[in-house]
Length: 359
Image (cartoon, rainbow, N blue to C red; front, side, top):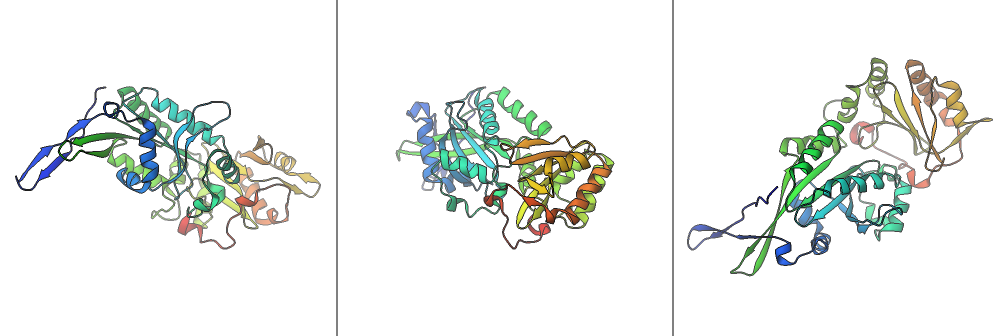
């Protein structure tokens, strides 16, 4: 795909007319991607304002997402409204591999864990300090529970844009493509920059923004949960709707029910087409019985698996009897569990707003 320039005009007040600024390429000026990266880091607010709705905290540059590869993420950022990690990839010119590279980085960042585990990754891989993240409007436990991609390039091949659209619309992968354009004013010896969103278009971008929002004005049921429940069976839908009617707490992305114990969210329950997945933060003992045996014995098909080096669990609720047992456990027995693991950084504030106010 050839370059399509976003024209920039100069207003000549004396002559009462416009004059077109000369478009230039980064390569033509000898500018490298690293220089663009430095400009963004030195003036992040101005750059993110140019990307319209973005308000991000830069966590690091040239971040190695895994010990297995030598590649580096151009810019790793955080969305302070929901704890999402944002992979920003810069490209001088155009490249068919930019999207696959960015997606690979997002996948590797997702494997870095959430909450305190992600903070530990940042301490090893970046120079960002924990207090710099303190302005985020989410709990530590919500950090890096989701990822999204922002690509910035001078042009995009058709294959990249159609793949981004397919991933977004079919699999709800959050991808944004911006075209960066430079222009030169020869008379003033000045360079001007603009960023134009190529994908998604305005209406899809607004939908993506609403998905990321931690608030909803559509009543007690949240948008992300509503979207999931629209694809779920009757038993699943009934359980979640009953909980939402009772103003049950949800995570900051409104994609799962959240069950706290003694100031720490211990269980996240997310609907699936049949049943629900439960993510358990930490490990507990219930009398002589450990948590793995407890769930396997009392659920119809728990399918218990280990997470984070067996310090956390994931298991499955398969039907109405499982949902009933799980909720009864939360109401009557969970407070008596003796927790053996669980990170202090995953603790919620002692006093929190109602879930309906902030998810």
